[in-house]
Image (tube, rainbow, N blue to C red; front, side, top):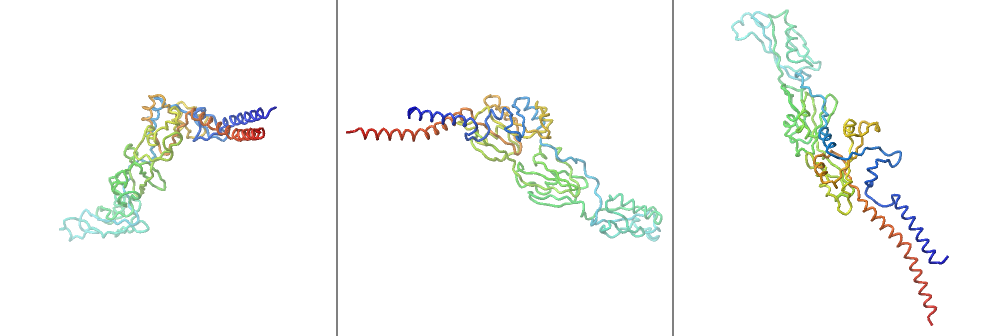
Length: 397
């Protein structure tokens, strides 16, 4: 076998091996190919299963009906009547039907009213107030009317048809705290008429920012629930009543999404608005890269509740978790899909991925083959040229 034939055979073997290895994901890329995503085939047994949903008008309709901000404040009951607590300052006024009783002497008949006002007093650490001839009267946990009735019952056998009026002078226990990213953090007495969350935040001067990256956490009875500030505005059902001793914490945490793949820019992007659509998110990421992107392979990664996934035709029996991983596919080669992309809203922490076009992967493969071929061929050509030059020198007279 001649030297040239051996060289050609060796180069062919190297080239074939290179092509075979290139087909086995040797080429660099920013993510999975569109074929890999659409096949829904797991890479290995440890891969997370997901469902591919091709976006159409029916899918958009389901998302529009179910895509509202989730109501996470389950307790929407109005506050109960304010009750006394340890440290509250109260006033007690006792009335009798006629003079000559326990509190009103006979000679007081010319007075404009048959009553006596006791000095203001603080509910003690045992939860009681003191009333002459009635002793310690339980006040903690009771409403004013309940304390009034307790005083009248304690005095009815000693006074003439006694009645009592109990009023809250200084409210120190039934308080509401609003703190965090507000203009005027405040702790104020609960309003007997009741207030909503937005009323409480208004008392604190409102949020410092514009609100689209603001969250509201409500702590009540040791439990916490959080919603975006926008949900209080756009969904009135979230603007629930505040109760005495609630704590409202307002903080800023920008809503973000991640874009990578064949977009103009890659990275994490803030919404900078109450809501943005998929079309706006693609625009925020610099649009599609004209030299790389496959317009038919724009994917939105998101977890959906099982019932929502089922409404979109997903076979949820394949999944055991309450949240089903969904990959939405937007085919922007279809002009009508741009309308659909303006109606699907991005959610906090969504992932937007655009795959490379198949031609890009083919071009990468050809470039890689040229690189390997040149690496193998250049030394051979150099050796051949050197041998030819030496032969020319030897044969020259």
